[in-house]
Image 1 (tube, one colour):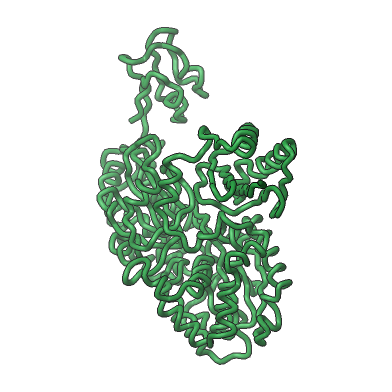
Image 2 (cartoon, helix red, strand yellow):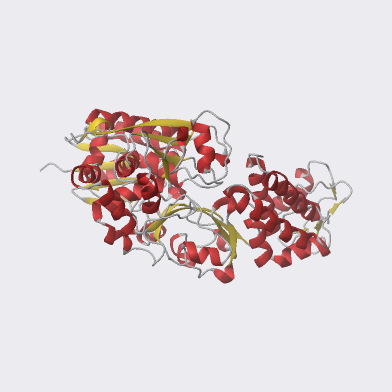
Amino acid sequence: MSRQISISVCMGTGGLAAGAQEVMDKLSTELAGVGIEAQLHSKKQCDLHRVGCRGFCARDVLVDVSIDGVKTTYEQVTLDRVHRIVNEHIIDGQPVEDFAAGEDYHNFEGKQVKVVLSECGLIDPEDIEAYLKVGGYEAARKVLTSLSPGDTIDTIKRSGLRGRGGAGFPTGLKWEFGANEQADQKYIICNADEGDPGAFMDRSVVEGNPHVVIEGMIIAAYAIGASKGYVYIRAEYPLAVQRLELALKQARQKGFLGDNIFDNGVKFDIKVKLGAGAFICGEETALIASIEGKRGMPRSKPPFPAQKGLFGKPTVINNVETLANVTYIIRRGAEWFASLGTEKSKGTKVFALTGKIKNSGLIEVPMGIPLRDVIYGIGGGIEKDRRFKAVQTGGPSGGCIPESLLDTHLDYESLAKVGSIMGSGGMVVMDEDDCMVNIAKYFLEFTQAESCGKCTPCRVGTKRLLEILTRITEGKGKANDLELLENLSVDVIDSSLCGLGQTAPNPILSTLRYFRDEYVAHITEKRCPAGVCKALLTYTINEATCTGCTMCARVCPVKAITGEKKKTHYIDQSLCIKCNSCYDVCKFNAVDKR
């Protein structure tokens, strides 16, 4: 009796970087070598297909092998592992336990609740038929053929969906504002200009399931009366752009975009606009200016884009995750979505979990889950079992949350209380070796460089803040610097034109709030407790533990280390450039860094 064999290979950006295309080619060759025809979406012997990001990026390449409905997940698959998987599992029927996903993988996956990511990693993002098989475009069909625009907006309002781009504004209310405007032309814009360091939520959704975003845009367009749409996505996302363009072409061929969608007289189509990577263009009015061919700079509000947006016409802007949620809300109902999360923060949230965490990757959890459950449950704890120090949520505009607040719940209100924000979903974990003053400086360097310069408080204020932080990390801090940082941060927040300036000081204020002792040590003791700030470090060799192996002297680029073999070595402080090479290479912990 013939067997049903299905093999899926994770081919998001992370998977491809780890060698997924080579693994897929090798699978095809090995299967052919044992007489099994393996083709994309084959209805014969073996269905070998690509999928988008599976989430557990730390374990790519991920491969699922399913035989007669029994699935085994393999992690960190390399070319040399393919032969055993094909011969032992597919031919002999015995899964290769050596390569199979273990407890970490099952904890990572099992403790999530996936809505937006529910089909990412399951379907081929380049095949519209795969999306149709899981109910794709049925939500749009339902809305356009059986619901009025008002009923559609009411459904979104009852679901409690809030914008996932950062501010958390009620999506249904934004749509209502757009629908109430009278104009000969309206627009829907999908903001896929994801620019936070370490963030890859929206990119992964577009790469893994572009049709769910297109479907959400169709529903939004119908609700507000828009006939044209744009996806604004940065050019640095070539794979996402490629799959999005293909998905749009396929949707047009099926009649889901065009002049008479579902034979209902609805007209709507979508263009892709590539951004040049300016962080400020994540702000909606700067994004609009960029699409119009102008320099990406924000303008004052009101009027809001829903009143006067793209080309002066009413425009509703939602980000990728928001629009993807819309599709599932229509499929499963407003009450279902509202049952997830908290009273004021409904549904789930996608996060990019990065930094000093064992299980890095893309996750989706219910709103209101404690941070501790994410860091230690899904994330598996801190790398090398070091001590957790802080986690920053909300990207460069977010705040740093200390260990004492690990039981903080992940929802808009709870994060605001502790001095952070939800943002678009970046989550960077830090351990005991991170200097919080340097962390604040790092994020200020980013926001200061990305400031468009239009308003003086942001243009000049962030520069002054960065100068003070730089002075402190170089051991030149002054007694009144902390008060100056706090006062200037408040001024920048209160007087900046847009969200970039209004949130840029958050890393400073949160680290001052929870890690003030580190600032004090830098200023009064001229010491970096974490041993990070180079200007404040002194390297010495411990006579009690130095074996005279000479390794430190051999790697020192400026010959600052001297000593005879098997005798204690010494560092000439006048020559030392504090490159850390001696510290890294010493196997006897004889190099002290203070």
